[in-house]
Length: 264
Length: 248
Image 1 (cartoon, each protein chain N blue to C red):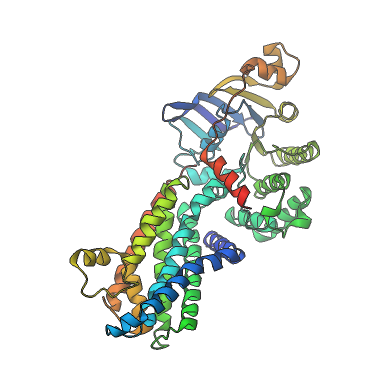
Image 2: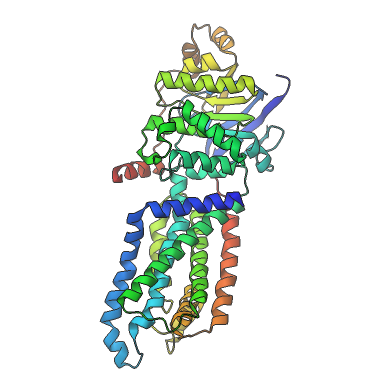
């Protein structure tokens, strides 16, 4: 890990007077698997949105693969792939069409595109259902498709915002193996958030614990355990962030999702 | 080019897959055509206006177009809510191309919808005066579609949820339609109404369509085309700017 591929210094994001991300700094080395752990509403997704150019920070300096997401958006966008926390598939298109759409947007040459799409869809076991509309898929199938889609263009950095949420252990394992493979063969950097501590423990080289917009600890899983004098990452996490349950605000999107679910 | 094409294609696929939407959005134009066309036909004829269905049909075609066009543009809100917009916004392609692809797709869909209304009006008894002007009528159909899809896109770029959406639909679509000369001739109106109709871009769309389909004209083809063209370009520019500023 000679070079930092992600550098964040003094990043702050305010929504009116609510501080979602509060002056955080961290670096991620090239080829590293870096995990962001934090309770609901800690600022994980907001940070990812800023790093991936779709949200403007209030202040702070960021470099992604040497470029600034605020001013050199296209250079930054070329360098990463992302699997969002919320669904981002087009329900009215088939699985294959969603994959094709992504491949074309990222200008993956046709032969490579077709080869990778087939390989990835087979890997997440959706190849047989490639011509079905995504709206007929179960939650787990959609999730698998989103992960597969994020990998079509073999990005230098892969952002994964709770990618395995709602997947069974077999599938989670399967997907992480694939991502680990790409991390090793292509030196792909992985930036992930997850609620599954054992996943972070197994996968991540380094972990940052974020709470209420601030990074409270960074280090390897062993370092975090040593620091908090605990035996597991979960205990370390609770020691660092406390035991209170965080409420997440229900926003209009959730209402709308519910409405649409009722209509279908 | 591939970016614009794939976004255009997506709009078309979505259109052809939602048969209920195609049929559903034909209901209102058809109702207007039948109720107004036959309801006022006698009065209009007695007043010396001639065949009212012939007068009305181009206006109803324009109605079919602006409904579909504005809704296509405004679909961005839907995409934002259900996440797909993010997928396009993080891709390494310019927002201008994304906006153009979507808008061209929406405009194509709206044009198809306009053509369906035109065909339906033929069934009801509409008779275009000559075939020669038909290609020009198609140009107007596409221009109206483009203008109002771009307008929908521009508006949707400013809204983050569906709350303001109904408001805009009711306070934009209906006035645009009723005050465009789609239902009544623009000659000899009260001054205030004339001022509004002259400022309404749809008036020029309806007039252009009516001229090319029936030979009746209020502003003249050159004026219709120029005004529509200029406004379309302005709205496309403003829409692209607003779209490029979207944050999630």
